[in-house]
Image (cartoon, rainbow, N blue to C red; front, side, top):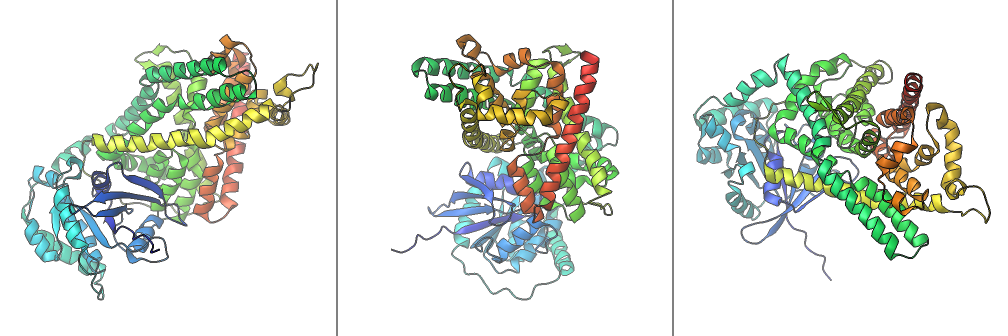
Length: 617
């Protein structure tokens, strides 16, 4: 039997901020798969596209790069894939090079460099609408003749030009690759790119005039940071205010499911596992999906609008005080979603000391896995009331994020003067044009991230919850024993051993029992607490209580504040440590990260507990 013939592979390449991701989304829609390249942690995005003749091709979105001379790990992957080297990916059958029409002179140099590879290629002249808006006219027919390549004007965010691009791609796949001759040097290519750009630009307008006008305010040394702080403040307020209704619906639904399961399933271990384990544990995490989607929505809008790069520029001065530069800001901001993609994003940082420092402090950014823990604790112990124009719970959440950021900056300052000592480096970053976010791209992004969260809830969290339920349910105490079932169980005994370590910082027995399961995933602590407190009651009315209601009566405020502080600085999950191991090629830095974060979390939680106990009682 002959092996199945693989679909032709087309590589989507271009400079950063050329609109490559928007074009990828427009071409592939929801038919995307996201993973990592074999052997490296650079993200691999691939999708299926049907050409006008009916042929299906695989589109691979490669990391943005300025040349085939790599200066960072993600640029190295782009080069290796295009060259078909090192077995990272089979060589593409053809190339679509995405070019920013408003920045033709700079982007054409990369087109000329790619043309030297001899592979079939088509140029997608993207954002042609922005060039027209600014009064810049480009003769695409002459550009095609001078390059010797087909050129298709596109507006990815409005799906313009996609049919023509598909036709040119189909035609391109019928062409033979030619032998690549000796390549010209970068300076010669840049000179040729300028000559071609000048020759095809029939009318020069104020390219980027609107963007420059906005930037006079957005990048102002005084107003710029205030706008950034206001945007972040609104984001954290929205996480609580906008998610309240859908969270209540999910919470009521989970409570109804627990009641129905308790009535329908005969009393015994199966009922307990379903009601006290799966529904109490996993349900306690799923309820926070609306908050996580709101957080991701804000981050995606900042990225798609072009503001994210401005935020990095604004943060450059602050980052310089701790020995980093603005390029580190984007991986750190990505870590608010999850530390894993944030750490992976450090591959764009050229300086190895800057990159190592950013990796080591990325876990201090409050990832979405911490959000369920924050939400439970804040809802249980912080009053839902207004403070001026803001919500007090949202203010506390904002404060926790700020607490993590300040901790990260202090850690970076110490690391850059000790284990990651080195000279500070500057950075250059091209500012993209401002654009309205595209609803389609936003929905695809939210769908992918929501799917990852739900898979996590149905995978790691479900497995951890069932395992914890089993440990908390067995062995059963002997007949007539005065010891409670959960204290007699394996989890109870582990919790008693760990309580010796954590009691000095105010942690109770239930918190101590969650310490080991949370190594699987940070949000497991919510699922674990839900399971533990569900097992501690046989009262059906109490079973209907939310975890928030139970904690409100079970924990003193100093313990709650200490636990919140612990979560801000706590060591990361095993998955994060594994990624750090792969990024740093060994266990030295993951173990160092775990040790310093554990010590920092322990000390800060202890300080919080004893100070709050002295003030509150």
